[in-house]
Image (cartoon, rainbow, N blue to C red; front, side, top):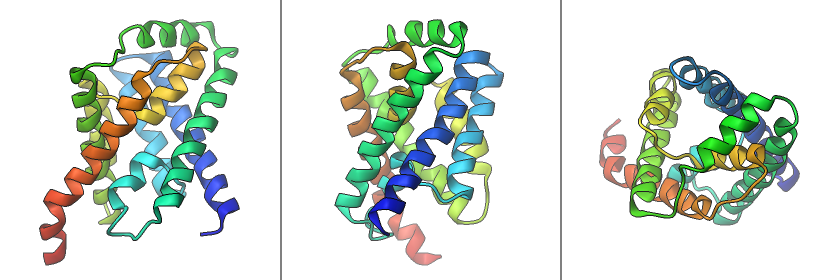
Length: 193
């Protein structure tokens, strides 16, 4: 994939996830987590580049590590910038983002929640690739209702809150490990398909 296309599709993915995240912060439970699924549906159907949707397929889809790093960096930069724009759009969304960020920390619990989110993201995208959106429609609300942590949604929330938190690094690592780990434990199943 050409670098410009890679970058454009990574910006597109950040934007689509930002729409779901905005709805989540605006509407809260129970509607917000369900509407958030629109973001990943858009990413998959429009073939955009979302780090958490790609990292588990690093080996099976033969994604270049440098391309995955570009996707991650562009998702993070675009997501934060979009969040900054959103912070000026709606005071309720801004305040809810500020309150949400206060609950994050660098801890073992936060890391485990990030790993579990990565696992769900891998399963959701895998099911989409097998022809069903059900993994997205159920998986996205599942990780949100459970309080699991998604690094691209989190960077958007940080942008909306106009702040930064070191937990984002733990979240990136956890999402990657959860996704790659799920790929590893399920690779024998895929070979039988």
